[in-house]
Structure formats: structure tokens, C-alpha cells
Length: 341
Length: 209
Image (tube, rainbow over all chains, first blue to last red; front, side, top):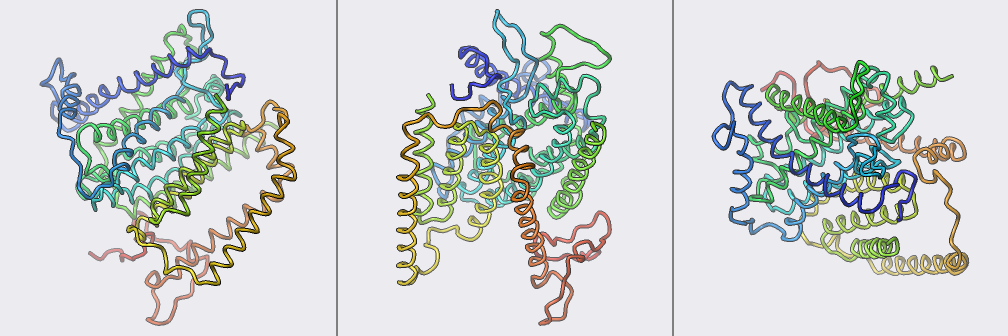
């Protein structure tokens, strides 16, 4: 194999099974998160939320998927064919690829072979996610541009400015963790948090990362890219049926990736506090539970805060968040050097 | 396996590079350049330079090309060719430069590259291409070029901000009398929680409707 390093010890069939598993888990958990968000938003706003289809409204997403899949496949005459079709594919492929990085557990023995409970653990660590995030941007950009509509175009332009602005802060916020842990490997970073989860010593980095993640995943209060009151739906205004669902899935999947990175780098991954060491098979559920807490926080913020104005978004990103992230990196580096001397 | 990937990436890189100069619509040219850069990143991965590959995608395909797409889709949204066509002298000059470049490349390839084809290349050292190894190189052997390049970028950034600030309409100034700005103007205080729209190129006075 081309990437035959020490960390790629698994046989090829394990890698294929893991790929299928990641794809299945990622796409299987998304409808649950969507219905969870709608239920929770309903509760926040003093109403029931979906409760008609199935027990507690749990089958609502299935009903909606059937509805979307059976819709007429239409597109505007002004759209540019191949690019219009490629955009949702780029979005969802890059989101699933980024999800492969999230570690759900350490290397364990499964059926006699050593298997890492993660997609891959590359030596470049979080840079892998940022690389796919950079490509994912073209899904938004091409979708908005190739639709041939003014709303879509404005949404894509906003996406370009916003994603660049907040990607810098998001990346810099992680540098503090990487300096503290002394490694880029995500499993090594989780192991380094045995004494204390990094959201305590790296609280500024955690704050910056969380805020920047809201902007990177187009979530409220940074959802100017698809601001429904001004742009209808931004870059996917002209999309309908399954293509629109692909964009929505990519957005929720990105939310899961960001939650997974936050859990791994700041919230101790699969570790539990107070010296509790459950058996290994519990680890993935610990990670999933922590991710759900983080996603609940996303939904809580969406129900609470109004949308920012565009100039506020830019000023906040460049004048407050970026200097804060840089100061955090500098102070962390100085402290680490001083302590290790 | 790696041979197949190499040929896919190499063909992608060459097609992308040709597309950049052949395509008439600047938006498609930029997209071809993105394809070229991503193919190059795949080639870097084949050479086990993981960090360089990731940096290539994040910095070039991600940040730089996004700005290109941003500008091109605002400005050059139609298929009209850029400019009115070069002059005769410019065409001849470009042709001469192209030939000189081809000759130079052939000298390089025939002189040294052909000898390397028969060998297996440099042996793989453990840790090569990881962020750790590159960081060590940048802070020891290549410290001076690294620092000089970072100062160059800093100067460019400060210069860009100063030029953008000098644009008409951003500062209070008498009509026809270009306002003078200094770097310290960037640090001027402003009431907390107010925006100025300065980033958008216009100006909204605080307190006015």
C-alpha cells in the first residue's frame, strides 16, 4: 500500500468494513439528530414538535425522506448542468471523509485482529479535517454559482467570506491543544488527557473553537449563508428533492464532525472522569454521548440567539476571535516551554 | 495500486494545467486550477509528504483559490475573453519566454532527471514528511528563509490593509483631498458592539437610521 506506515496495521478487509460502517453509522444517525433537533426546538419554543408519525414522532424523518425522494426532479433553466449536479455530491463526500477521522475508541482486539476504532489516524491529524473542509467549500460555492440565481449567488459569496474568516480561528484554536499534547495523532491526544481534559487548561481555545465551529457549519447565529429571511435558503435555494437533502445531510454531518473533533481534542474522547474505566466496548458509546451533549448545545444556541449582522460577523471574526486564538497559542507555547525546561 | 493513483493524479494535474490556459471562461479556469492543485496534493501523498499535501489543499485549494473564485464570479461571470488580446510584441515575447522555459526544462530533465529513472530514488526515512520533521527543518536548517518569507507576508498584509483604508469613502476627508492614514488608524477605538461596514467598503454612521 502507498501509505504503509506503522499506524496502518489493519488488513485490507478490516479497512473496507470500517469504511462501510462509518458511512452507515454517519448516515443512519443523521435522521435521528434531525428529529432530535426538531423535538428540542419545539420544547424550547413551548410546543410539541413533530409527534404524528410513529411513536413520539420518531419516524418523521423517514416520512420526509420518502417525500423528498418522490419529488419532481427539477432545476432552473439558468443552471449550469454538470456543476449543478456535482455540488451536492462534493458536499456529502467530503463530510463523510472528514467523519473518518473521529476516533470512537483506542486500538482493540476484534476477532483476533487489532482494530483501531476510528477511520484513520494520520500523522497530520486535524489538518486532514481542514483539508476536506477546504474541498467541501466548493460544494457550497458551485451549488450557489451554478444555480444561476441571485439568492444562491449571494449565499455562495457569503459562504466564501465567512468560511475563510472563521477557518483561520478554528485552526489556530487547535494549536494550543496540539502544543500541550505534543502530538497531532488524535488517539495520542486523547491519551494525553488522562490527567485532565483539555477544555480546562485550554478554555480559551475551546471557546474560540466552539464559536468558530458554529460559523464553519453555518449554524445559528452565524447562518447568514442560508439566512432564510433574506436569501430564502442561500446556496441551495434552487435545489429540491434528494439534492437538497444531500446538502442538509452534509450540513448535519459537518456538525457531527465538529462535535467529534471537539470531544476528542477538548472533552477527553472516550475517557471518563473520576477514574472510571469501563470495558472497551463502552468507549464508542461514551464518545457518542459526549457528541450528543455538544450537538444539544448547538441546538440550544440556535433556539436562543438571533442572527448576526454581516459586518458584525466579519468584525467579530477578524478583530476579536483571531487575536484571541493567536494569544492563546502564544501563551500556551510560552507556558509549555517554561514548564518543560 | 500506487501506479494507478499516480497516473490518475498526473493526468489530472496536466489536464487541469492545460485547462487553466485554454478555457475561455475565467470561472472554469479557476476550477481547472483547483483540480490541478488537488491532483498535485495526491502526487505529494504518493511521495509520503503528508503535511505538504494537506497544506497544499488547505492553503492553495482552500484559501487562495476561494478568493480567486470569489473575485472571478463577481467580475468575470460571462464567457467573454479577458482583455482585448495582447499586442504583437507581447505575443512574440511570450513565445520566446515559453521556448526558453521548455529548453531549460529539457536541460534539467535530460541532464539529471533521466539518470534517476533507473534507480529507486532516495530511501524512505521513518518520519519523513510528517509535521514534526518539517517543523524541525523549518526551525533549524531553513530558519532564515522561513523568517524572511514570514516578514514578506507580514509586509504584504500591512500594505494591503493600508491601501484598502486609503480608498475613497472610507475616511472623513474633504472632497478631492485624499485623507492620509497611518497604520495607527487601524487601532482607533470604536464603541463596543457597533459595526462600521468598513469591511464591506462602505460606511454606516453609528446612531443613524
